[in-house]
Image (cartoon, rainbow, N blue to C red; front, side):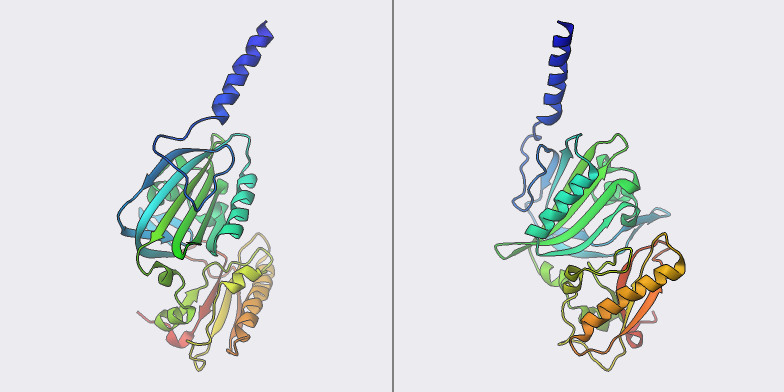
Length: 301
């Protein structure tokens, strides 16, 4: 009898854990399919267009000052949804699910990161998303920014996943629906940025630990042919960080720089590859990235 009662109690606990209902007046977005058995714990939707900031890089806070590597300021209508993920799901399972969904449904990935390379979880939770429940160890966070196209309407998508210290997993989704020239700001010509500031970090082009660049990342660069003044010397600079010796990381960053340079040369543009290795962090942070630099156009102010 005692064992029978214990089984009933355990059954009720399992039922509560996996059959929790969404909060009232919440609904999924047509642009994201929730992870099985997850439920909505927070949601909001703005009916009017407002100024918004779309994050396309890591975040940090130094002496109470918010530091953003990359972002785009736009006007749009924002929808947010925070999901609680079942306890029997691992962080890697969520990562695989999100990556597969993005590859299948979204037209372009702008940026993604995992662990400390994303910056501080406290900054993401409190300053970016204003959801304290998302605070987690820095090693247990993942972020993606992407562009979704639905019936010719462009939407910017942010997905942030964390596993908190109490082992609970959350997925936070933010969507900015285009109301102006949002798409033009995101897909602005690399050549235009080079002319304006003399250098540009290639969004979504991130080398792996061995200096390899995926074909998807290369295709996201776009074309320079129509807008670039070939008379200006152009350099591809690859920055690569890891646990290996400096000489090893520098050699691997050379593979990265050569790969991107070769891709750009297909358009008949002269470009020089440069391996920076781990020698040029951003604000002291080791962020692997690829930059195009036109020294003659660099601004001195």
